[in-house]
Image (cartoon, rainbow, N blue to C red; front, side, top):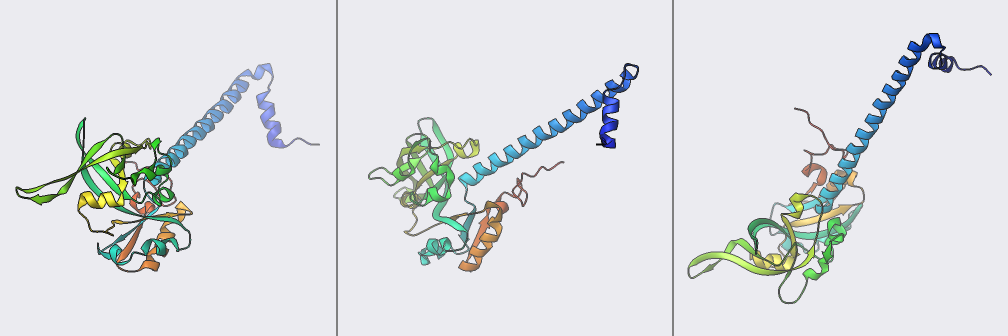
Length: 265
């Protein structure tokens, strides 16, 4: 059986005689250089893919794959069956209503701004994966008698800038909340500035009417097809509703295929 010519040349210069020691050393250095280069490339690609996946999962874990919004705020009150209609769309795995606002948080350590999200404790964990991984307590405890619950870090007071009109003018609307759960995503932006309460409690502190919603969050069966599925939901609901998806909201960080986009100056 004849040896392939390429293998013959490689072995000839790799295991050369003593008088060809210089060629032997060069061959070894070339092989090691190629091996180190390939190894470095594999390590860099592994770290890059791991970072992309981890960041994407954390972002999507705290935010839905898609969000149904409306140009008319009262539209959600006029269509109480909207969640059911969204869930009936093909490839939609779950849907949950939400209220989004910004409030002031008052605790023993001081006062700071907070992103407050009113959610349905029963359906929200099916859409937001971070609610299925709460370190302490349970999201189902948001619905409780007496002082309403909040998923955050300690007992706090929430101050709504909308305020209430009294004899001395407008004053901030303040409600006490009891901590019933603590979450940790590993991303400071979410862990330090995000909290969840029940929809009823969110409407109470904001002075909103019954049935008011900011939108509906949806989960799909394939995150990389969120744009096409969002369009299907849009076509099903029609005006005045519109749908945004995570690829659109985080286009600065990710390409269309979900990979992290690196921008050089």
